Image (spheres, one colour):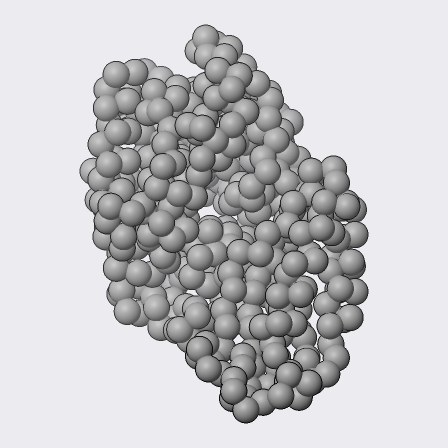
Length: 411
C-alpha cells in the first residue's frame, strides 16, 4: 500500500503542474497546451507500463493490456483529465491515476487477463471549453454525433477540430466505439461533498447518479447609447436577463426533493460601460435525483422566459445536455462491496449529486463507481483535496474487482 500511495501522490503532483493558472488552482481546458502536456504525461506512463496506447478522434486516451481471449471486450477503468477554471488537482485526475495504478499492479504481479484491461483518460467532462460536458464519453458511445462534435465552438469561436489541430491531434481518427468492445467500466472520483468525511468512511459505493440538464439562454435586445436613449425606448437585454435569472433559482426551491439550479456562466455583449447591452448569454444547470422534478422545472423555466419576451426582447433557450438519473449496475456494486469487505475497508452506499462519465457508459455497459472523501466537501476550487491513502484503498478495491472481471490467470 505504501508504494501505491507514493506513486499516486507523484502522479497527482505531476499532473497538477499542467495548469494555466499556477498558484491559483488547476485550469486545464480541453485541447489547450496544458491538455497537451497532461496527455503526453499520461501516455508516457501508459507506455512505461507496457500498455498499447491509442487516441480516438475526440482525443480520448486508451492504454490497453491485451487479454488472452481474442477480440474480447475490455474492462475499462478511468476518468477525465480536464478541469474547470481554477479548479482542484483531484477532480478527474484521481480516477485516471487510480486506473494507472491498477495497470501497474497487474504488471508488477505479472497477471495474465483473459479479458483486456483498458485504462481510459477522457476529455471535456467538465464542459468548461465547449459546453454541455461529458463530451469524451458521449462521443465514444455515439450520444454525441460526429456532426454535433464538429459544430461545437468555444466562446472565442474556435471549433473542436481547429483546437485539436492546434495541439497536433487528429480529429479524423475513429470516434464512436461499439458497445460490444466494453465489458465493464469502473470510475473512481472524489465525492465533491461532505458525507464521507463527516461519517469518517473512506469509500462510497455509488448506487445512482443524479439526472441533469443544461440550457444555454440567449436574450436579444437592442443596443443604444447609455446617455441618449430614454428609459422607455430601451430593449435592454441585460435587464431582461437579470429578471429571469433572479426568478429561476426559486423554481428549484419550490420543486424541492433535492432539486438544484445554477446559473453558471454569464456573458454580456457588447460589454461596454456606456452601451445598452443588446445580447446576453447565460447557462442554466438543473439537477435532481428524479426525472419528474427536472421536467417540472424545465416547463416552469420556459414559462418564466416567455413572460419576458416583450418590448423588443427576444429569448432563445437551447438544451445543451439532457441525461436521465442513472442507477448503476447491481452486480458491479455488489462486487465492489465484496472487495471492500475482503480488503477490510469500511464503506457505505452513496448517491452522486454530480454528473460523471460513468452515467453515460451505464447505458452501454456494466458500470461501477467509487467515491473517496473530499476535505470539507470542497471541489471545483484550489482548496480541493483528497487523501492519497483513500485513493490507494479505492485503487486496491478496483484492482481486486478488475482481476475478477478480467478473469486473470495467476501463475
